[in-house]
Length: 419
Image (tube, rainbow, N blue to C red; front, side, top):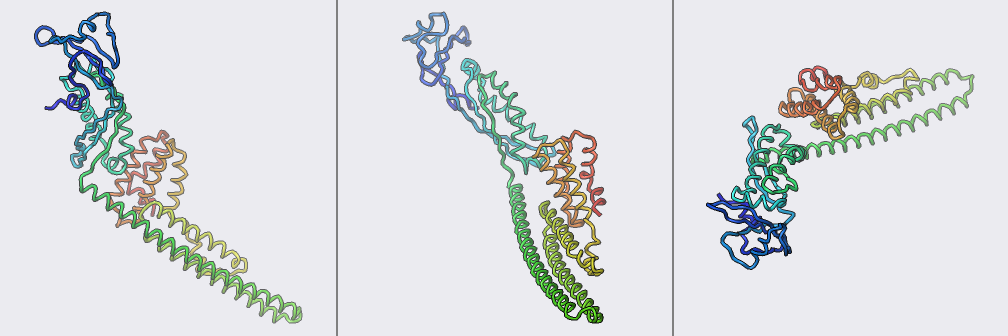
């Protein structure tokens, strides 16, 4: 097997005993049999030995078969890249882990002494073994969708161990960087997921356009009805002033006309808002596939109910309530909306980082959105987000928060609460 340390010219044989620019010269002496002993080092530009022995001066200008030397590079930014195949403990998934190692020669003497052991290969094999074992224990979903964060965690965990091992061979580790290559079928799957997300975004934008258009139409209808109502009131007031108290019958008749005008106005508003709300909710509901779309749909429903309550108030004051308004106002927020409202408030109180809280909220939103599909829900996606919630739940310290998050790890329980 090729000696990588020599092949990459980290050190090379050196003829003569003299300084070499950019290298440390390590001088050895042959002993009886096939042994050898370290004698001294010569740094770049050095003209006197670091030892009290006068051996350095004795060797200058002489050629002796007993003495030989190696020149060790002083490059502070050495780098080597290698790969190792990782098979997860489930034996189902595999991927190629690519490792880039940054290093320099910390102790030239140790490197030369261990040169026949191939220090660079030894260090690479040790790193590959450590990281292969570590990644084999990890969750496939994390490797698939959140590898950069996982890589940083593993790098921080093992940099000390790797540095200590490398130091025994004279190498000083500057750092490691990890990347991975997925099998072709997994790459195809990721692309399909990305394309699906893009399509969902397009549907969401189309739904928003429909909602805005419908809302503008409702606003126009409301303004027109309000203008007609104002004109009717003005005419009524003018009629009262002209007729006087003597014509009570006419006043009563005009009063009924005003009530009818009010009712028609509220009906027009109810119809316009109901059409706008229905179109918006249908459009949004058809594309509820992720948390953003779920929250948008619930928000649309809440906004519509609030607007319709405010529009119904004037009619109620006159003892007139449109049946359409009564039906819509009677509907409360959905169980899903209540669960989400509680979740957003509760997760803010947990001892999580902003990034962890965002991931937890995202997974809960995805989970609820998927369960709203009932029979069409994807078991794989549900299991994925339950696993992510369980992983983050392990970091929560308060018992009450652990108990609260438990329901999001039980698909059947959560589905019951959403009914």
